[in-house]
Image (cartoon, rainbow, N blue to C red):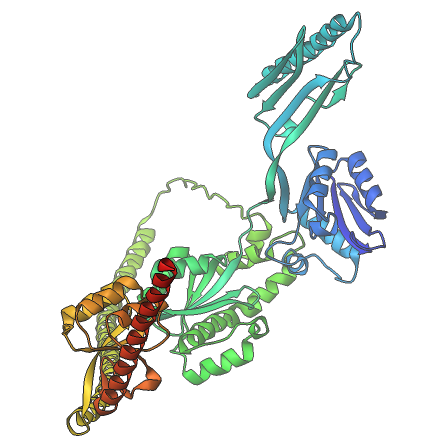
Length: 638
C-alpha cells in the first residue's frame, strides 16, 4: 500500500508566499521524504496514484469546497483523501499509537499522518454520492447550415447514439443499475445521460473524446463535506459515580485527564448513561464507598466494565487532597460545583491511581502501531500484554485419554486414604461455607439497616425541602397582602379626606368620564346614572364629537369640566344647549382613583358668571341678526 503523509512547511493559501509542503511517501519498501510545492504535490498524486493521501487538516491544502471538489475529481478514483485530526489532536493520536513526534518538525508530522492513516486512523473526506453521471454529447458545433447540413447533423447524432448504446451495454454487462435521460436529435440523439448507482471507481468507463463525440464521466457531488471514519475507534474511559437524589459523574481518559464533570438533581439513569456514552465507553467504573451502591453496579453492568471500590469508605479529607493533587483539567474550564462532583471525581482519580503504574508499563511494552487505549482497556479487563501482542490467540486444550492400568491393593489403600482426607477437607469446607453464609446474612442485615437509614434521611430531606418551599410560598403571599393592605390604607385616607371636604367644606361629588365616547357615557349611565343637573368631568376629551355631546345634552346635565382640549364641534353643541364647559384652571377639584370632588362654593360663582356671559353672547347674536335683517329690508325697499 502506498500512503502520502503531508504537512505544510511555510506559506499559506491566502497569503503572498505560496505554501510548501513536507511529503512522506510510505510504501512496503520503506519511506521517502520530499519538499514540494502545491502543484508538484498534486502532480505526484496523479502520477503515483497512492491509496491514501493523509493530512492533519484539509484547510492546509484547500481554501474552499470548490477547490476540494476539483482536486477529488482530478485524482484517481481509488485514492482516498484522509484528515487525521478529528476529536483528538495529532500529538495525542501519535502518542496513542506509539509514534514519536516533534511538533516543530513538519516532516515528523507528515510521517505521523502517513503511519496513522495506514493504521486506519482518520476520516475519509467524502464529497460525492455513490453515484456516477455519464454524459454523451456532440464534440463539435453543427454550424450555421448549408446544402449538406441535414446530412452532417444526421451523421453526428447517429454517432452519439452508437456510443451511448455501447456504454449502456458495458454498464449492463457489469451488472450495474442505472437510469437514463435522452435528448432526441435529427437522425439519432443529441445528448444522452446515464445515472449509474455505483461510485466512480467501480464504473468501467472513463472520460474521452472522438472527432464528433465527447463522453464525460463524473461523480455526483454532495451538498456538504462528510467525514467517514476509516475504522471504528473507541475512546475508553474511567468513570466516577456518586449516586443519590443529586447524581454526580466524572469522566477521565485512560491518561488521567478530565473529559467531563457534571451533576444534576433528579438525573434519570438513561440520561446518565447517555452522558457517559457521549465521551466513549468506560472500562472502569468507580465509587468512593467500600460497598458499591446498586446504582453504580447498574452502570457498571450497562457497559460491561470493571468495578473499582476502595478498601474502606473515602473520607472527605482524603477526597479533597486527592482532587487538589491530581486534577489536570481546571485550565480547560472544568470546575467542581458541589460535593457530588467532588466525590465522583475523587473516586475516578482513586481508580486511575490504582492502575497508573500498570498503564505506564503498558506504554513502554506496546510497540508502535498498536492502539494504546485499546491495549490499556484490555489489560484493565484482565488480559495480559503477551496475549495482546500475540493477537489474543486462544489455545485449545484437547483431552488425552490415558490407558487404564491394573491397580494393586497397596495402590487402592493409598487412594482410600486420599478419599478420606478429601472427605474431611470437604466437611471443613462445608463448615466454612456455613460460616460465610452466616456472615453474608449479617452483612445483608447491615445493608438493609443502612438502606433504611438512607431512606429515612432522604424522606427527612424531602420533608424539610417541602416545608422550605411552603414557607417561601407563604412569605410571598404575606408580602402581597401587606402591599394590598398598604394600598387600601392609602385609598382609605384619600376617601376620608374627600368625605371631610364633602361634609364640612361644602365640596360636591362629580361624575367622571374617562373618555369622551358614547360607550363610556353608557357605562357611566348604567353604573351611576346621569341625572338632570349633574356636573360631568371628562378626563380625556380627544375624539369626542357631535353624537357624544348630544347624548349628554339630552340628559339635561348642568355643566361639563374638560380635562383637556375639546373639539370645536362638541363645544358648540354644549353652548347651543346652554351647558357651559369649564377648563381645569377655572375650577378647584380633588381626585381619587375613581372619584372627583368639586369645590361647590367657588364653582357656583364661576357658573353664574359663565351663564351670564353665554346669555349676553346670545343676546348680541340676536341683535346682530335683527340689524342684518333691517339692513337687507332697506336695501330691498330702496
